[in-house]
Image (cartoon, rainbow, N blue to C red; front, side, top):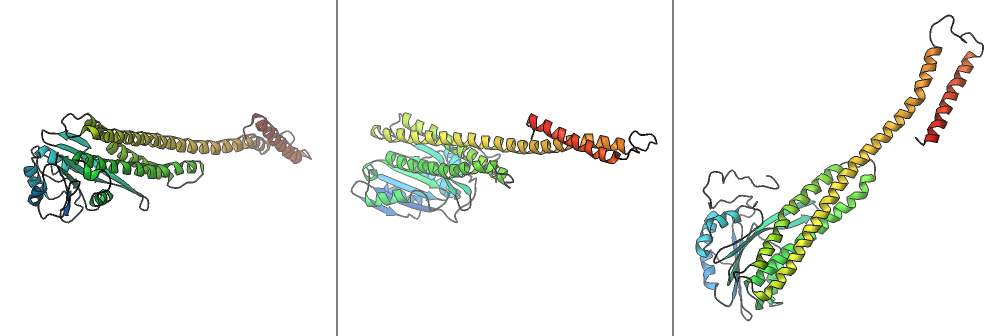
Length: 354
């Protein structure tokens, strides 16, 4: 499967808004998790179906519904009917190759983005699509698999620590987005450290596989760039939103989140330039080594060309060649060769050719 696009053959020819899962099935069956809370009350459960979630939704409270697994198209269809989510938005949510995006209807805000992680042991970059459907009283999150970056947030809500239990769904949305963006920075930091440590190896001869590593990291950085840069647009939409989904006193959190996204984007650009420079330096180093080899070969050729000429003249088969029958002719021949070699050696040294 392509790193940057999903196989869209299943969706080819379908009408817009068709409920089709595009991507890899990552768990056997979907799992529902629900948290319902106010400042003083807290309920956590795992409902059997979406209908069981409806009874928890009420004014002046927060209901967080999490769905693990996107492949159950029938459940997604029921989700759309129950919470009035347009088919076009559901189509985007089920396409795990969807570009991060922000959408708004009269009743809902929809955010689609990627959670990213880099495994240092396997040296592989992984991604998971996370969608958020925001209403005044509930937040629905949809993920591809169970087990995520939000466990510490759930624990804080259980214990009643921090602001989450005193705030509404918009603050919960901020906390989830903040966790995702923080992990962007951690992923960039880990990958950036690897890229920086590669630089000294460029100047060490015979580094096998170095070019393949540079190219692999360049692909990974491009993948990060593709999925992180649009998040800046999402956060700006949330800050500028005038529909009332984001409370005025929570805007400061989203502005701080925007700073983190900008920092992540700028750092990606830096590492992208660094990898391009490393590729250029690598090729320049190879060219320089090739030039050194050619220089040595040329110097050796310069020594042997006049020697070959003299030897050729000396070895010609003529009866009346000058000095052919001279008693010390062979000695003079070698003296001439040595003088030529020493003369060229002195000349090359003066010119600093080696």
